[in-house]
Amino acid sequence: MTKTTPETHAKPVNLRIREDVRILIDRAAKIRGKTRSDFMIDAAYRAAEDTLLDQALIKVDPESYRHYLDILDETPSGEGFARLMNVPRPWQG
Image 1 (cartoon, rainbow, N blue to C red):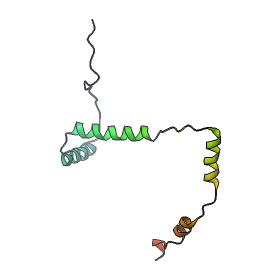
Image 2: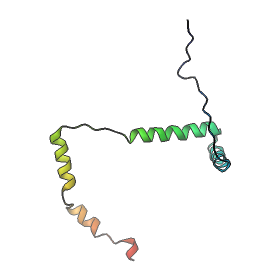
Image 3: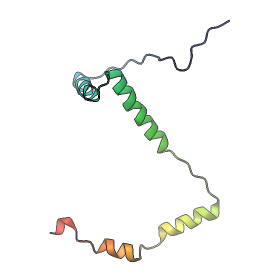
Image 4: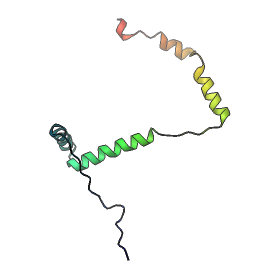
């Protein structure tokens, strides 16, 4: 019978990083009260989640998609758009 490792068992990951990057990570980890490993795992986890969430796929029927494209092609208008276009620009004084 083969003994299997539970999925929750941590596996080692080795990284080579420049000294200045390690120092920066250590400083940030200390501020958060975390170990370097925990800090790096949390940061990598958040980056991975963000990347996957950015890949959302929305499927619609052809008619709905055409309607969506038509809306995007419309010239902006309406009270909100007019108000936005008349707001003083910070770089103009």
